[in-house]
Image (cartoon, rainbow, N blue to C red; front, side):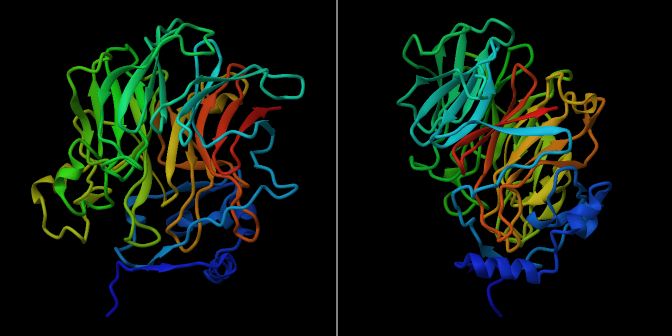
Length: 440
């Protein structure tokens, strides 16, 4: 019997497209299902069933058994944006190319004065885009700071209209710069606030993104630190202070674990009315096409979310048989399960006033796209509808179109934020662009 955890390599984009077609999932289905919510096996889907307005609801009952399908290495075949290719939003919305020619744009955050701060992680810098010309491009494009270490998360402190600092989450630390509204250049050197376990190219490896948010009252600072491994491989020392959301005072003191067992909470957000902390999570790999679902959820203080021994409630990871039975009934089931391996990254809440009223304070999350799924999924921005601040369990495709009909990929959403004029801004590190979505 072959090893069920082995991964097959798909090297040919044409072969991948043929396999996807052979799976029996057809793009025309999206046209027929936009008026209802896909459930059960139909909700698992792939990119060919994506379209603005398509809703899905994935439940615990929909989870297959581990190794029901073979894991594959099917990374995106990246191409330049073809002529005529453009992101697609729901009817009534327009999509514009706000900025291009960036270098690995990742998280995007709106400053209190309306400036857009963008982390360009690979070159290690923070960029500011300001305003909009008659042609729809930034009036101002400046580098705020450089020489950083794979920066990702950005936050302003204290919360409110007049911050004094801008915090940046590097892969190995949290630093802050003196800041006042309108600054286009850092006016001082970065001040070290806290060290965190490093990732990526630095010692420690594994997930490298670190996001950062402050509680609504500004008393606490939250920093997400992903795991070093997929499922606790190798030395356990590598996972110390990892797969957690850490809590600090704003000056970096009094560190503690706010929530744990979260494999990789790439995106953090604070709900604008409830003040609750939310996160957007990449779950583990090599259990099959539909395990384990990524998720978006409210974060419970002291909560345990399963990694690495359990997933989505009391489901035991087969690579850890019988381990930690005392934790089995403590595993929290996340609020919104999304398609497995979509690589759910940054998230935000829509706080503008130009979208239809039903969008107000709903969640939006960027899905970077799968690399380890036979039927490609992700490469889109989804909406998480809320009712009185609570999720319904459903999510809706909001921005799609980053995959060609042949299955090639030209765009990968990363960051989302609300601009001062009510537009939703999306960074895309596939085409190194920023997209602007507005309601007509």
